[in-house]
Amino acid sequence: MRQVGRAATTPSIQYPVFLTRIDPHRNMARFYVLSIEPTLFGDYAVQRRWGRLGTLGRLRSDLFPDLVSAHARKAQLVRSKCKRGYVEG
Image (tube, rainbow, N blue to C red; front, top):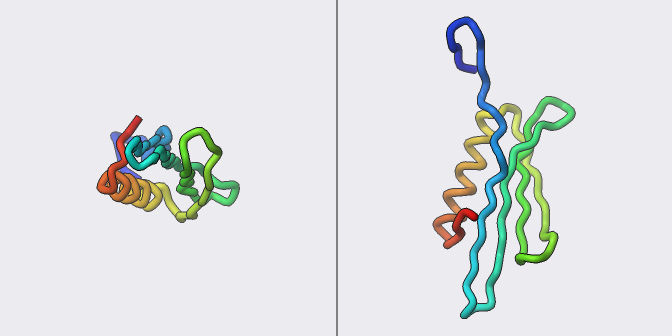
């Protein structure tokens, strides 16, 4: 938690990140969505959904005890996917 004046603030939950990777020559049209959601037990889940564009895809949730570590994991996954050719949008 950071102190701002007298009020304490915590990192906020941001909007989902939507990444795509399209290569018509390889018939590739993939998506990857990352979001952070609070759980009922006070943890935070980094939710990943991926698959072919136009499908529901698959879903995986990783639990983290605090929002800071969840944001760190989300940022790491975004960097990793961008290195593999995914772009935002």
